[in-house]
Image (spheres, rainbow, N blue to C red):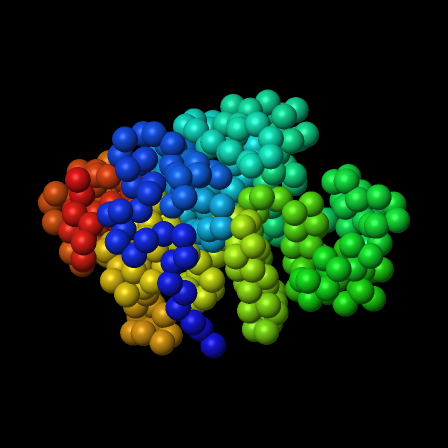
Length: 354
Ligand SMILES: Nc1ncnc2c1ncn2[C@@H]1O[C@H](COP(=O)(O)OP(=O)(O)OP(=O)(O)O)[C@@H](O)[C@H]1O
Ligand code: NI
């Protein structure tokens, strides 16, 4: 069953969200209790240089994640979701240029701007430790020559568990993600897609990172395991962790997210508390995604997303949008996913551009 969660960390009045002032004033995002955001992404932009073209994969992206918050990033295939996650961890290939800021402020440890942090710092203090990643294609990410048990125990020991503690801890983490301990003795190539997915999730959770980036973590799972995984992520946030969940699945976002950011053609076009976004989407693209849901109109968004090598200067959604007019040839402002406001010249509900 799908349940609608009301936002836990964000007041219902989106104009009063603590980070909306931060977005407009440029100061650090803070939580409702005055704590700074755990992650504050500010103008993140990623370009890939191809031989004769530039891919605009992520453009001027702003978002915050508070401790305890589950933020879902949704959007069609190819809009830049995975590139966003990889940019935050310094995992992009050499033809990528990353600009902007992504400030991480873990409760323990020094704040760091993930953009421009040294590879050495990212490897030692960030990846896996401060920020975990459940990769989108776990089967290819798993080391082929070690069993799941060995991978998990090694990860746990690398993060402070003793040789004595690691075996029981590995079984606990495996059980948390719904993996049978027997399956821990298999090698990655002996795992089904769904088992590999759960093992990848267990590996990301084992060091207990304050921020988890989960890129389509329910791929290949059947419905009960999808819900099990989503609820596990929700419980992490309820216990004070933070999760950025990348998903195609709006029902998943609705079930567990506090906040939803909708990405279209490399930009966040709308970012709102989950209940508000589902009840009254402001951006026509968000409305289109909701109309495509089976329990709603079951009508797909017409047309196709644009090529990221050839984006228009104005609104990239205009060619697919029933509300577009001449003004949509100019960039919608703000284009930055400011909470409560859509990057649209003709929003459906509140959210006229400032
Ligand atoms: N190394 C690269 N070089 C050039 N272009 C790339 C590279 N990696 C990704 N891209 C492009 O960046 C864009 C965003 O890709 P990304 O993987 O982030 O999409 P996504 O939203 O995660 O899609 P999906 O939902 O299918 O996983 C795509 O157009 C993709 O082709
Ligand atoms: Ni992806």
